[in-house]
Structures are given as structure tokens and as C-alpha cells.
Length: 93
Image (cartoon, helix red, strand yellow):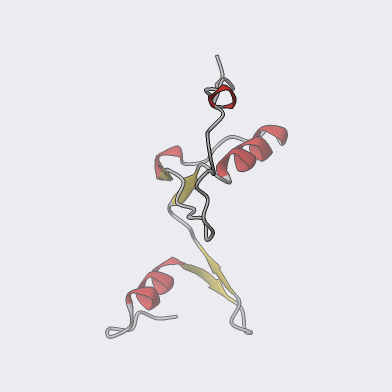
């Protein structure tokens, strides 16, 4: 896809990251940023560890706090059992 002078921002970003386009339009894109979130990233890092791989281009990673927003009323009902609110203790030492 060639740059379109009046294309959308999406079109321009797509065009700048194309590596190869098949005859059927299937496109291989180069991803130069990796967005990490606290919901799925632990599984991804475990997969890297399991296969003996390292994070590639670590400076290209941007981690953000959980952005998932529940679609139902998630507020606890009644009194909260504070004995179950234990701090996370799984950090590597």
C-alpha cells in the first residue's frame, strides 16, 4: 500500500509498517511497539520463559495498568472480608 497523501491516520500507519503484501491482500506488518497490560502479559512472559526466549527490543515495550472495565456492577455487596485481602507475594526475590 503506497502512502496516500489524503489517507486516514490508520492508512498512513499501515502503509509505513508493511513488510510484504500477498496477491490476495494478506499483509505482513512490522510492529515496532509492544503494549503490555497486567491482564495478559504474565501469560506471555511465562510462554517466553517456557521456551527459553528473551524479550526482544525491550526499549520498545510500554506497560500500562489494567484497562479492562467490567460491564456489570462489580462492587462488593455487604461487608468486605478483609482477611481475604492479602497483599500479592509472588514477586521474584
